[in-house]
Length: 194
Image (cartoon, rainbow, N blue to C red; front, side, top):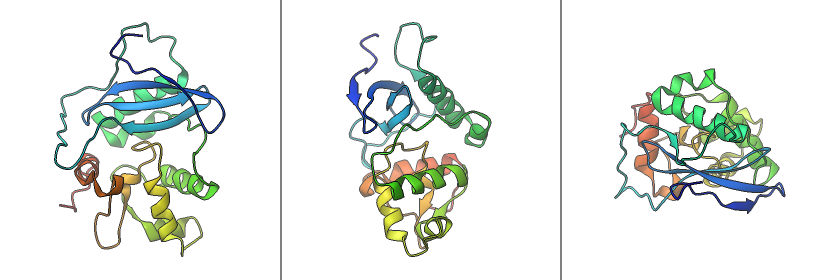
């Protein structure tokens, strides 16, 4: 691996060692931690905030390493393809496999919320916390759905940016990355939020 890549082994909640990979993207670096079973975490690197968020739509998604990429784990190859398609045309992500998610770091309820969100709310769509709770057959669990969104370890792939309040956009990353959420929604064709 070159000095440009961030590869570090970490033990995930599944008990397997995860390896970190760094991708370039229009939003900045994306750090992906994965094991052979799937993704442990997908996160934007750095201290991105509303004050310093500066997307560059010309940046292509690339794995930042110089070594031969033909021996990459399947989940990293799928993640690379998924993000390349997402940032070019989010409507086409349904045409490529979504990377497997190894195991969730929170409760089974959170895992059900994330799975339901990823499976049923596509690019260009939004859903309220309450509607997502109802989709889980637990209509009184809007706050618990909000907790799952705050603790989502696999952002963008599990699209917590698509979950909104009934009266507005709602918070993203504890309210520190509202401009990221707004950018993601606009990138997907949702322009009703300012």
